[in-house]
Every structure is written in C-alpha cells, then in structure tokens.
Image (cartoon, helix red, strand yellow):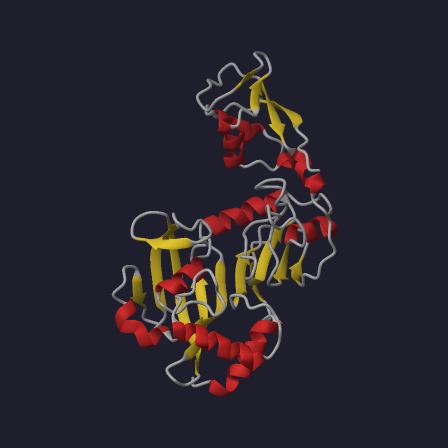
Length: 352
C-alpha cells in the first residue's frame, strides 16, 4: 500500500533582497532541496508553507518584512515507494553531470496511474538510487523533458541540480536542437496546394514545410491534443521529406525528418495529422481513411512479425550546451528494430 511521508524543513530567511514570498523562499532555499519557483508557488497554494511564530499557513499576499523563518512541508518520502528495476536502456553518453539514453518504444518515462512498473524512472532509481535531482517532483528524478510511451529515441537526464536547472532553461529558451524521424502516411508535397491554405502552414526557402499553430487539449477526448487558431500553447514544427515509398494504387509512405522548436505534448503527431500525413501506426491521430487502413494492413504484412504496431516516431538527433563546459554536444540515436525493419522491407518501393 502506498503512502506519503511528509517532512518538515526550516528555512531561515537571512537574505532579504526579495519581497515576494515565493522569490524570498527560493533565494534562501538550500540547493539540496532542488526547488523551483513554480514548485514553491505550488506549495504555497497547497498551504504547505507556514509561519512558525503564528503557526499559520502563508499565502502569496503575505507581507514578508517581519518573517525570519518559514516551515516547508515536502512529500520527500514519495520516491521511496518507487520500485527499482534493472531494465535495458542503452546509454548514448554519460559524464558526472548528465546522461543521454536511447529510450526504447513501449516505455513510459515516469510512473503514472496505469504504469507503475517498467518506466524509465524505475530504471533510474535502480541505477542511481536517490542521487538524482528532483526538480519537478519526487516521482521524476533527473527528468528534464519527456517522450511519449511509444516514441523511441534520445532523452537527456540531469545528474545534478545545477545541470537540471541549466538544461530546463535551455529547453525553455528553445536553445536545444531536436530532430525526429517519422514514417508518415502519404506525401505532404502531393497535397501542398491544399495544406498550404491552412492557417499556420508555410513552405520555407529550403523546401521544408513549417507548421506554426497553437495546440491545446481536446475538450471531448482528453487523451488527445488538437490544433487551435488562438488558444493553447504555440507549437512550431518543420517537416522535411527524406524518402518517398510508392506502393502503387495511389498509396505512399514518406520518411520524414521533423525539427521541433517547441516541445508540446504530442506536437509532431498533431501537426502530422494537420498536414494530412499522420504518422504510420498512430492510433490516436489517424485520419480514419479507408485507404490508410488498407495501407497499414499491407505494410504490416510485409514485415511478417507479431510485434505490436506503434507510431513509427523516433527522437533521432539532439544537441545541447553542456551546463559545465559550455561545449555544444550533439547526439544521434540508432533506429529501433521495428523502424529499421519497416524501412528495409519498403526499400524496393523507394522512389526518391
């Protein structure tokens, strides 16, 4: 049975250059707590920050002039409920500050209600015990960004709080280069006259297709995201056709590289559907066209195996600035076996 262990931390407010409560606490917090300003704001909202003299919960409007100490109540015991697991997750790069993995498909990054075992975090707990920083929360040690369960490829993990904060800042300021490979249904260029009329779609000088839209949670199906004209978060994707496979009867597949400037939930999958070339095997974002179903059935028969079909999407390249050395590090992850198997079987249909 899972339970939450609450620990109390006393924060002495010796530095007083800030007047807002959350900023003041952040300024005086020891680095070992790995607390962000957002996390502190959440603790204040949840009434987990107290004035020890009055024994009252503090609010964001509390005057900080006379405060000398605050009590923070943190659920530090949550991590102890995670089960360490020795899983097969290939390491692409590792040093004292960070580690880059080639995450397999069918692996959730961190535990959720329906996936408590077999996650990347279960493996991290096994490999690094409790040494990784918990910048987001106790269930996500070292996690900087995420990949969908069925998306394979590169993911970077921070091993120190300094590295975590620096990498989070890089992702937030869009200084990280991320390129994915996807096997898409159809050829977007064939429908260019149609999709170019859609809001946010443009063809750039290098002939890549840029999709720049807002993306938000679908109100009727909360599992999915959708393009919206003015609500949600800005998402920017650039698609470039690498190879076209012509299977006859107007059925085509495209190997597409996609560079994303932002990192919204399901971003590439949503934008692929928006330009009417959904990712092959993607059950959430398929267009429900009869010809797509027939195409999927034919391609799966080519591979002649019993592997579970998933969206064929792979985080192929990643470039970051090392937080310590400031050196630009660039990584490339090998394609997983199912992806490479599809490409091998499709090679005889290659047209460009």
